[in-house]
Image 1 (tube, rainbow, N blue to C red):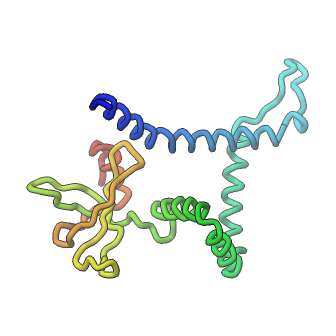
Image 2 (cartoon, rainbow, N blue to C red):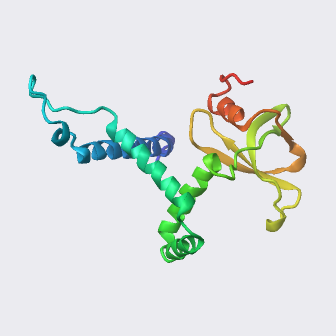
Length: 197
């Protein structure tokens, strides 16, 4: 394969890595809302408009129901799921490694942004060479357990993307930033054009 073909294949793969998760997320949300709307079938309740013969729809009812179901699931898990039920679920996941991998990856990523133990709450500035610095998030400050004392893990999100890279960095190259994690994330993801306080 020539260099042009390799470059095109590389661009295709990178494009898929960006477009596929976004498209899949949009598809799932649209599917959930339209499916719930069709289940509600408000025409049976409200009937048909006698003047026009058109069916009566309530715009956004499916979206409201999907959000309500997610909220109810959150309340249920918070107040009713006990430790034995949680342990049983994790033992079940241990028996299905592929499902465990998918579940734990999605759970870890979700918790990194919105969980009780947010992982991206320590914005840092890292020297990467010369006068060049990058904004990232300190995710692991002590790597003694993997025989890397004096080093940390820093996550660098990409601009205009949901992706990023993880680097192992020496402590002396890391400087805490005096800004909120949300402002740091907006600044990086926007390509530096976002204003912050």
